[in-house]
Length: 495
Image 1 (cartoon, rainbow, N blue to C red):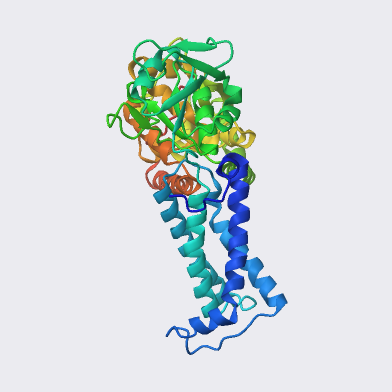
Image 2: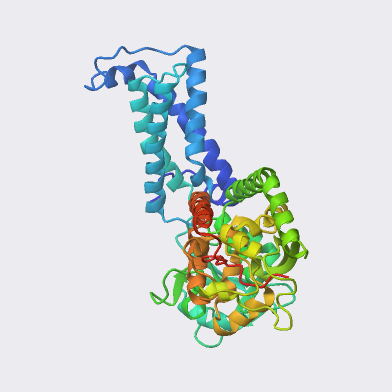
């Protein structure tokens, strides 16, 4: 049922920045209108009959008071409703319920602000009217501007570089496929469909991946089926992000489903992609958190770094720092810096290997000072520079040496799935004591983090890691260094 039949959905429901603009402006406008309605004498008289407010004096607002209250109320509502400005492909009922929960938060926030800030006193009667009006209007508004087929016919587009999968995808789709989007100079202008697919003759190529957003909007696409082969996860993740930013549902064929993308496989030939890319505003906040954390950490730990450097040099006269190449997001590489905690040239002729510490044993290559550093994680401090420059994040899968990644991938085929996000100083696997010695279990934790990642989740992981570091420091003061990293994922030898 169309709640607002007079609205031109072709314009309002295009997604992207238009949806964000419609969401933000509409929220503020409806909030001000609800507040104006609440101050109408007739409305105030009706609300006065309610027992909880009947004994309170009813007052009108001067233009200055109304402007201040409207500004404060609109600001609270606009901030609380920020998650709904994202044109994500939610179901209509989910959108309605989510907006309703956000409205409840608005009412509680306004009541709290009015209680603690005496310059902002929204009368109880007015708050009841505003809350009721917003609970009715805002959920309906966000349902109205969600993307849905204007003519009742769902339009599907296949996106990816695996043209050979399109016939199987076409048979599984329950809607007409209008075309496919593929990297430039990879596919022909059209693909013949002769094996029973829903396309009678040919499936046209609508453009390259760089034009995906334009194609989704120009064809009013409702669903995109991703079909990527090989290890080019950056293109897959980019396409997924574009779909979410424009409110287009993303699916994948169950026969080609990557476990990092879906929670369950087997409920049908086409399954929804469970992985939700971070919104740009969340990415900015995460990056700001990384910068502040790394900057403050480097500043506060400067004296500690000086003591560590002196201890390393005094023990054996060898290098203080060492540098290693590690795997970054989407299989790229970067260089990390750490305090040396093993003897010089620890790898020797053996090359990169999993440290015995990760299996709970004692690694003879670890120096006495290195045992303290590794137990207290002080050898990781220089990695804060990598966080500051953007090569790493505070929270994420711990990066491995490319050669070790290749060795692990030979036995754990899905290992590269952890490359979907930027590597981190700590992560879900680390706080649960899982190391590279158990790659399958570590991969499970890394994938769980990728699916659950949020600023709040990152905060919990950081707090738990800091607690473990303090606990390790207290333990080493009481019993002496063990040299065991207790689950730290620095599984490569130090040079």
